[in-house]
Image (cartoon, rainbow, N blue to C red; front, side):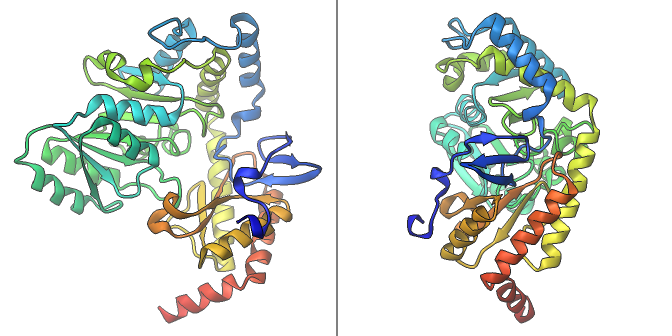
Amino acid sequence: MASAGQDPFGVVFDRVISATEALIGDHRVLLLGTNNYLGLTFEESCIAAGVEALQTEGTGTTGSRIANGSYGGHSGLERRLAAFLKRRSAMVFSTGYQANLGMLAALAGPKDHLLLDADSHASIYDGAKLAGAQVTRFRHNDPEDLRRRLRHLSSQPGEKLVVVEGIYSMLGDTAPLRDFVEVKREAGAWLMVDEAHSLGVLGENGRGLAEAEGCEDGVDYVVGTFSKSLGAVGGFCASDVEDFDLLRLTSRPYMFTASLPPSVIASVTRAIEVMESQPLRRVRLQRNVRHFHSGLQAAGFSLGPVASPVASIRCPDQETAILFWNRLLAEGVYVNLALGQATPEGKPLLRTSMCAEHTPEQIDHALATITAVGQSLGMLDTFAAGTAAE
């Protein structure tokens, strides 16, 4: 990677101009890989709320929630989240990663079973390790495979918790959630859905895939993050389960981590209000998704199975992916380079994500640049030949 030029760990944005542009040195770059789906990182009211909290409550809490880290804003945000998600209870974590880590470790123990989609995020697998439960993987987005595995486990003691995601972060595909709800009900299991990439994106009100699929009542636990659509950092879990607050006493990543600073809590609280009151942001996002995805398809790139804010270009090998990524960066288009264990089946990808604030002109520029670089690398000919052979 170093011999090919830049590497993702070494890229530094010297100045972020807006939700869609930044400077690397004096080189202007179009941001096409930030997960900033609704463009709220530069929303003036969110910034103002954060600044006010920073000035009145200081830079940080310097403690965990069970020590000195519970401020009025933390409890207020939990109530606001619960109301938005139409759930009885919610709790806030310092990162989305910790939300998965903390919930899985608190909910499942050595005598229980965690059934994970094979393409689950690293935080889900790490949470399973911390839980010490027996882990069973089922084929990606395959309800029948999950059904078979639950039947196999039916005679074994312990609770069964199924974990899936709303939008999968690498290929942008969604879970067949209604089918998973049916399977978990048949088996008397529990279901957790990670809506990290679908919160604010899917559903009439932006509550995620469960809302979009009309099966929120079949989801026992919703986890997610503030670092995508809400433009900040942090994580959460929400549920209607009774005695939910007991999880605050058993979740180690919640108990032993400093709580979020008041400025982040304030900006996220305001971001939820913006997300609710400005549905046109989702409309613009979906318009941009259709524009960009159809352009990549027309150019002949091999993409994920559905059009979503995440669009990943499949590359024939790692060397081509690294070269492609470097050339795009040199041309002023920043995307994500995804290699190795981070991707399904370890296949190299160039991952992009759309933002509601991208203009049609920016998308056209990105499409033209990506297509030109792809052609120069012979990628479009390669995929055309592969498609013809199939």
